[in-house]
Length: 286
Image (cartoon, rainbow, N blue to C red; front, side, top):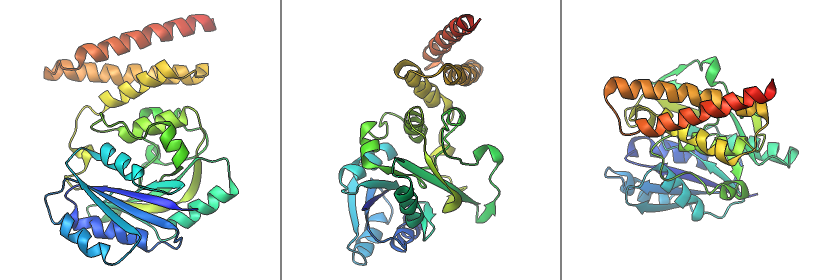
């Protein structure tokens, strides 16, 4: 059962080798590594040329800077594995990560996506993960409304599942993972391994989550898509509407406070529509 490991990277020569080595050191050996260099201007290219000499399982493509979604999607298109794993270039896998997940898939053949716990390291020190960020399996759609409940670096999913949803949205600057996982969890339960299989390193300035404000704009857009394209049971639909209204209202307050009117009308329209749908649903329940 071949796994294609996709590593997007941009100007992370300082940590990329650690990520690649964590895959090369996997106890499970049937994999390929595809690194997509998203237009790096540091020493990434020379580092990868050196690493290519160490392993025939490693391939490398360099493209103009297009964003992490484009890089991941391109990596998948260049791959051949039945299963797809993603690894952010500042994270690293534990040596038994793939073996644990492949064993889980063999024992649960209907599962199309399996993820796990992770370790967090911030500024060189391991930190305790707050309860609201603790991962879980099964039906996690409602939990996934507030924030991303699956880390790309820990997920392993079937190629068929990834292709069914056309991969990551390339028009999203951030929250592209939230969007894909929300689409998947609206229709599927997910597998889960109750142990850390990846270490995520944070605190550095080049993390996308530290570059962008008003990230909930993209989450609101994703919830709107689900609302328009999924037939949800009423409890899930109400939970979605509540979260959409909550996040949209916070965005509107922030837009008005800071004089940012670019997305104000769009978000107001989405929130007003969601409020009307919620009122109609509640009347039907009476």
